[in-house]
Every structure is written in structure tokens, then in C-alpha cells.
Length: 352
Image 1: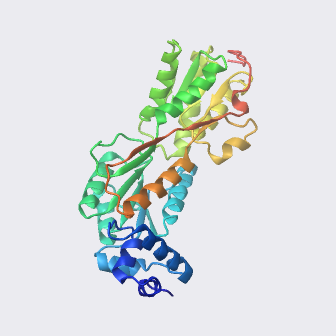
Image 2: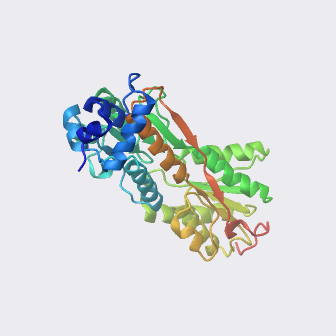
Image 3: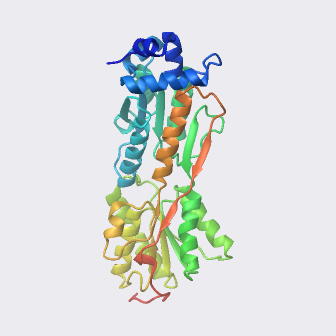
């Protein structure tokens, strides 16, 4: 296997010069012509970096730690896989950590990460609370570890020493409700855990922007963990039935997840309502099953491709020596329109 010494001999430069070029270290003394020759020789000789040896020299690992919460939902699994692929695209070793298996609170996760001391850490944070994440990011930054927070669903301290990439949940919810309004609906209900504030804000803003004053909300039990799909769907089905009985004028429902949309469709069937003929339904997540339902589900899709691209780009930049200001990048959700919103507007079409 070729080494930096072999490349140095091939190009006719010092080993230290080869090291600076291949590790992306800025050095005005190294010309572009020398850099090109070093990269060409590395490719020609089949050079592969020894990350273990480099980590020993630096006093910390040169790998990337990717921390996710337990992938108990399909979208969490898809998001975690996308970010893992993005980290691997940097050509560095990647260690996956399931934060859900570590005792609650920041201390346990911090102990795991400081024992490894990666070169960079990605926190895929759909379920991380700020009080769990912010102390970890701050402590790792003090150890010289680059941190990237991906898809935080909670507001973070703007001064947090890390890059962030997230999707605007309010924008995603607005896109869902706008779609219903554009199809002529004016009596639109929301089925959601109200602590999922981005969905609630998007629902409210979309209606306000169209001067629609009525709000119909099926409030789910706030004590139900959102990963407990069985309890959530049972509660959603019951609360949606009550909402539709009390408000037969409702012609459409926006649900804060596809799982809740599935429960909502069940509630509509319980009351003799047909989707989409009597009531339209929009979900959120673009879970795998949504496109294969008897009435395929209109939904909001997470920008996983954007997360993947931004993660690789930001990691490459930071590990290549970029010490510029922290990046705060935002990606947009996309509407996936299917048959569940194709029906006419006919309030109370079923048997109440």
C-alpha cells in the first residue's frame, strides 16, 4: 500500500508537504501546481489514508461519529441512513451511535463521545432536546471536535458552536394546508400533538394568510410519547371521530405525521365518510406505506437529499480546515400530492 513517503518521492517534495496537501491544510508556500502533482501521484499510486495512525498523531480519532436516536419510526430510520451515507462520502471511518441506548441526559452521551474523541460529530437530532444536545456540542467544541446538528425540531441557542442543517417544519405544514386551501377547502382540521409546535404554527399561518378564522383541532394526549405509535393512533382515531361529529362542516384534515393520517382515515371510515370523496386527508413524513394505501396519501416529504448533500459538504469543509462562521442552512419540505386530496368538497357526506 502506498504511503505519503512514496508520494513525496514520486513528486520530489518533502513528506510534510504531501501531508499538508492531502489533509487540506492551508499553506501559501505550496503552489497549485504542486498540489495537483501530489493529488495525481496519490491517485496513480492508489494511496489510501491511514486514519488510525493520523488519529494517534493528533491525540484524537479521525473518524466521524453519527449520533441518532433509536430509529423507532420509518422516517427516523431513513433520515439516519441518509446522514450515515453522507458521512461515509467524506472517505473517513464512521461510527454510528444510538443515543436511545444511552442513559437519559447529556452526561451519558458525552462520556461515550469524549472516550472516542472523533474528528467530527453529527447529531441527527429529530428527538434530541436542547438540554440534551447543547452541553454535548459545547464540550466537544472545547475538545476540538467539529459538530454538525442535522434536522433539529427544537429551537437551539444561536451562539451554539456548530453548523446546523434543518428543515423548516412551519414551511412544511403551510405547504400542506395551502394545498388544501387551493383545492377549495375552508374548514380544515388539525390532528397533532400540540407540542409539535412547527406543524401547529404552519397550520395557523396558512389559514390566517387566507383570512380563514375557523380552527378545528383534535388535541392528542400530551403525555403520550410520540414514538408510541399504538397509543398515538388509538388516541388520534378517537379524537378525530369526536372532532368530526362536533364539526360536520370539516372537509379536510391535516395530520402531523403519516401514522396519524392513517388513524384519521380509520376515524373517517368509522363515521361512514369516504376519503377523498367526503373528506380530504394530508399527512406529513412521506412514510413508505403512504403510497400503497387503498387511497394513496398526500403528504409532506422530508428533504433527505438536501440533508445528505449539506452534511457531506459541511463535514468536508470543516475537516479540511475551514474555520469560518458557523453555517445555518435551511431546506424546504416538498408536497407529494396523491389521491387522498382528489375528491370534491362535500361536507357531511357520510353518516354522522
